[in-house]
Length: 258
Length: 281
Image (cartoon, rainbow over all chains, first blue to last red; front, side):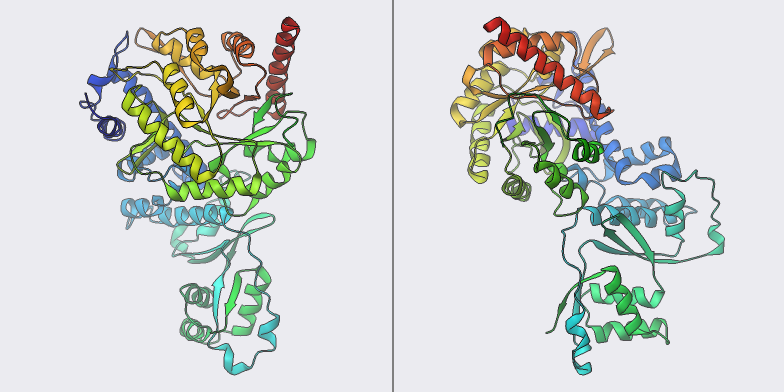
């Protein structure tokens, strides 16, 4: 007779890999054979997983249709089984999975949309933190500003794409009928900051240089470093104006002076 | 805050109903939240729970801890649960007599344990560890199952009775799950109920299930997606007579109906409690 450990590993192999040999002999057969009983669990597992995935990625589901989404989801489940008891975590590897599947295909925008949807999910559960109070900055000696480091607000995420992901995302919300045509050949890269406000999730498209500044700050760069990066993207970048906009939207949280 | 609980049935708290509960404050005894749904550190879900908690007693019901697994307990998960308990002061905290992960892979389902001495010893240790970490008693709920692992040396009822005795946990009796498992495996639900120590049961769950055909067999699937069926109501009446008027909860997790439907199911449970009281008097 197998140990509890062996039994649980065999059960997991049966449900995730479809190999039932190790488990089946230890299932009591009274009118319904072991494989049929295991299949009830396999089916439940798949439905729970697909439901959770569709709740997290409604735009992807709408773009590809429910049938194809289920097909995608089953392949994703076999490649990236859940690693946590909390089902809310299962979507984390989904954008990367889609990137492997659709990179350099006509559907290369799908991973970026998934990245955007995952960013929305992360923002929804992030801590409540007061946004940056700009008062100390206004009286700070100009020479000190370049050395400052900022934390991005925890309920903000940065997502960029060579596709118009914000338009695609908006056109596929529940309140839209899905008839809008978006021609990807017309281009339209997007640099997006996703943030949670009291009203819900907001997506803001940023000028590329503003995005570059925020990205540099979010990686721990100083304001001076970030300004250099932004200026290489757009020589006429206006730092004061960009910072005011970030503060106004609550995109920054804390400032570190050393 | 807990005075209301027990006198009236509660309902499972679902995000779809947050706003309506806050605005209408339906007359239900208390609300039960799936712990993992509120592990968020901030944001709208957690804020809604704070507003709801101001007016209702709350219980926390975990579905993802995988307490019966032979993998190490997930300390991060336990820490989040601890934080939730600290912040919301629930009257009851429950987990399942099940496991959902092995070798680091999660099945995110409530899978049955073999009812053996080895599994019992393991569950007793795990429940103790969780209770020590949380600093409080937890309830353990019986799950629906579609198979039985053999060779079992104990019945599920005997397993639960020994678990509560040896670990000090309470029992969350899911009457629907008893019925589903009894029908799927062919045991007598009354024998099950009679084997559970009277004083151990601190909460009862009621829910709906579906009947599927698999080959020539009828199999009941615990969907939590419909009204409680008549045989389960009858079993509930029996449980009330045996265990007293423990807090009762209506669960509904898929195809979630309007709040009114849930409130009506809870009111039905209240009427059965009243009828049992009248007979007892």
